[in-house]
Length: 628
Ligand SMILES: NC(=O)c1ccc[n+]([C@@H]2O[C@H](COP(=O)([O-])OP(=O)(O)OC[C@H]3O[C@@H](n4cnc5c(N)ncnc54)[C@H](O)[C@@H]3O)[C@@H](O)[C@H]2O)c1
Ligand SMILES: O=C(O)[C@H](O)COP(=O)(O)O
Image 1 (cartoon, rainbow, N blue to C red):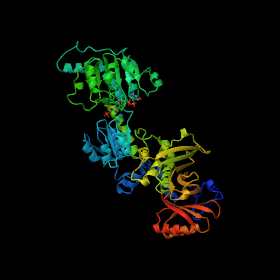
Image 2 (tube, rainbow, N blue to C red):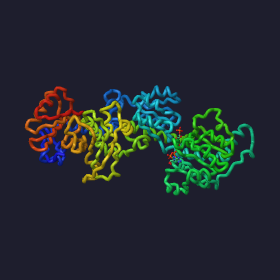
Image 3 (cartoon, rainbow, N blue to C red):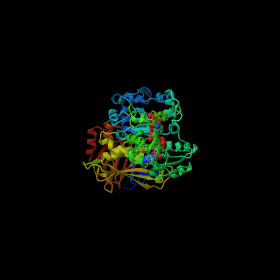
Image 4 (tube, helix red, strand yellow):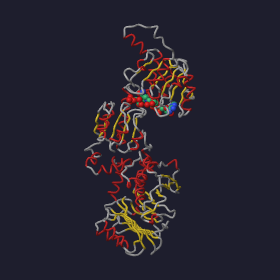
């Protein structure tokens, strides 16, 4: 890399306060930095930087800059964030009023219930967000019908098995849920079913209403001293366990992923699947429906159960093989079942399981309390509105969760990362194709103290978007990189500086590629661009082996030339004649009268003719125009 030694000086029109745009490291004998910063430059730029970090549409840019930029060109979308035309949120199932009120403050809310798939697909391309409960199947078809407009799906509840997460991710659509507000309601319903089943409450009630008085028929079983196996010791499972302990039950649990000390803390022993189902009198299901839990309660596992076991399911119908359960009920392996959830909802009217004398059923009521529905509605409304504003939701299901304080600290680096990716890819030439991308972070922080996922995603976005029709955001960046065969690796380099500053610089390396600007190839044979945030503004600080110093705003011209007097003036004149505003300029040279790299920031795209004339200047060996 050329020595960073340089002489820094500023152009006469530099306004007060602009000197900070040059870092001390740039001030040494071989790098001459010349700023043509304009007096109107700082305020709007700072304003823009603020918008980029704080103003809703631009915060959203972290997730979806291209779409928002595209949208911002349209009156409707410009107003969307200003209040005239607001985003549209489709609510496809009943949601608590408090949540609806929150949504209405921010968006147009269309409450359309019981939509068929066709109707949903018909509406969805007009919606920015969709809020569902468990009754709406958000399939790939829905995401495809959205034609890129749908930005967020909010699941007003826990289970997201009715949302095709892969399709959401591929379409860059964020999925958020409301994971906590219905926990207690579901646990209480589990306990309600447990006790009601043990004492035949539903059957006795139906019998009396039919005019009968059958005291002998409905003798129940006691709970105290009995063993309850909680299958899935998460939020609901642990609340059920806590309550069952209060009923005097011996509680064991099976959950391959739950920490044993959390279970021990409430007097529950974690055991294997087989031990749980073979020793329990009551088995309560609280695991999610996933490919590995689908029909996990099947003929084989019913056979392992204690004869006459009783089963409660407030999780998902699909974790039970319902035909196998029917067989187990009929052969006495299972003496009773209490089911709130079914493989198909609603189950067929003639379902033998629903009609079974020893099965107690409720129509998926676990989360249906006034309190839980109010809580869930507020939880999901806040998550969806936050996501539409571009805040990364804490309950994102298909994107890395980046806490808001981390996000606001990294905001200028997020912009820098995208711009570096964008620059690097434009330097590629010769049809070599990009395979390996390395992002190097120079930081004085420990790796644990710096979350780089969003930065990596933004580098990917910067690289992919200029060369494809895809839009990339935090949700789909990794997926799209993989699809395109891009291997993105990250490296940390310790920088001896203040840990108060998250990053000293970011480098983007593209390996095994040719460049249309040979000077962008570093000594290691890779295209390398490096940037730093100065005063909140992203700057390019090196290209290949050359140091530069140019603010990454507008567009950029890079020229390699023989260092000689008058070059700045000649290029500046051509641009001036073309009415192209120069915002920033820096010259880095290997030695006086040897090679130099001139980096010129321009507001407008110069006309082809102007670029041709620059290329014809005899001392210019190569040059490239880059859109940032
Ligand atoms: N009936 C209702 O209305 C209702 C209401 C709320 C939740 N739910 C359902 O209840 C289930 C649990 O919800 P939650 O909020 O407690 O979720 P959670 O994520 O907090 O807990 C799920 C637990 O299951 C565990 N698990 C995963 N795979 C497992 C396996 N193979 N065997 C055993 N345990 C496994 C996980 O480690 C986790 O601890 C979900 O299916 C949810 O959809 C239903
Ligand atoms: O997963 C959940 O949160 C529950 O099953 C609740 O589903 P619901 O919102 O359809 O009641």
